[in-house]
Amino acid sequence: MDVVGMYPTWYVPNIGTAWVMGIIGVIHVVASHTAVGAAFLFAFLETKAYQENAPQLLNFIKKYGMFLLVFSYIIGSITGPGIWYAISVASPRGVGGLIHNFVWIWAAEWVFFTVEVIGVYALIYLLGKIDAKTHLKLTWSFALASWGTMLLIVGILSFMLWPGNENWYQTGSTNDAFFNLNFFAHLGIRTGSMLVIATLVGLMVASTEKELALKASVVKFLAPIGLGGGFFAVMMFLYYIRTIPDNSVEMLHAHLLPVYEYAMIAVFIAATLYLSFAWWQPKYLSTPLAIGMFLFISIFGVWPEERIRESMRKPYVVGQYVYSNQIISRDVPGKNITGEVDKIAKKGLLALHPFIPQRLRVITDNNRLEVGKLLATIACSNCHALEPGAPLRNIPDKLHRATDADMIAAFLTGALRHGAQPYMPRIDLPEAEIQAIAHYLAAVNQGQNVKRLIVEQRAAAIKMQVAN
Image 1 (cartoon, rainbow, N blue to C red):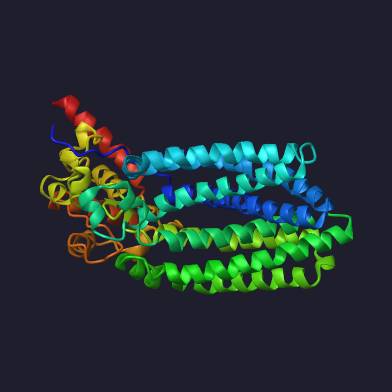
Image 2 (cartoon, rainbow, N blue to C red):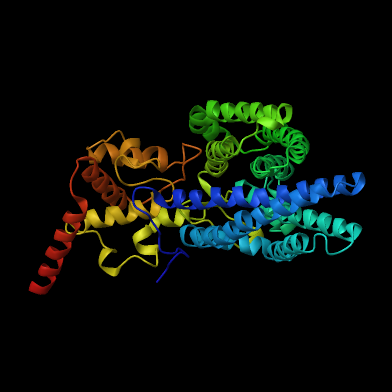
């Protein structure tokens, strides 16, 4: 049978797969950015302690380090594999594309990560047990290894947005993929953000310090680092948005900034005021305030930032050649990859998708609703929820709860078939498959119990088959 290399579609009702990945990813970003940022804060603090003969700062490093082991390395170690699982089942072809492009980059990242994990334990448990100069070298090695993991991952994440030039499509070169157009801008945002998040955690730890002189000294040292990191991240973000493709610009201005712009500005202002206050009046920094500001900035700052970054890739998931629905959108000669849109337009998903049940490969009156749901799940559910009122850009609301199947089909055969919307994939299917999707969406918008109807139609089909 002539097939395309698709995989089964993983769909989580109501929230969709994207939110599952997003929730795990945000937790991981907060934990991992804290780890990398804290590595540099430790290096700065220990250098200060070494130069000024201030051993009390080492006590704070150990206290922060013990918190880091629990907060970042345990949570990060749980959510890291969680991300791999989620993206592997939600976007297997996207992950496959990344692995084929960056297998040695990922191998190098694991080397750095191993040094990082060993380094943090050695840093904490050897503090005061080896000479100060040797320990300082260990701390700086830990910091550089931590940032090395970030640097390598950023090259991969930036390629997910786009290579930035046509050269990679022809060469398939890892260098062309890694040093993409917005690599340095993205690295700058991450570097600034890691210092902010690590500072917020550091202030949370410092707020519990009973020795007021040490508390004031640490807070006054950390707060300006966080402020500097925040301003640097904002400047790099302004540079970053000048390095993104046209579909991302359209998505940013049409759907993302109207929702998140003022909230992100408010978070930046709140973080700036908080860090400035802590710098100015460290003695008034309380633990409830520090915890509250950390949670506020992590939730209302990191979540929108990560959602904006992920959403700007649409309609692609990797390198502007794999659509979010896993269909290959164009030829990539450098990787011997052939586009699939025209092939699917000619023969249909029912004929080419290897995981379509045999009983659904031919559309009949008794399976049209089920086929429509299956096709909508394959083609749309990576970016859209299928249930009315669901939070992930649900299709019924996007269609204004339209109940006219012909009108829905007209939309599918118009804008989507010809790729007229830059942030939507080109979904070109045979007329019968378009009609099945429209029939299903109209039934959902009419408030019908689609699940019950599918069961009844399946039972009728079995009964007819037995009778024949």
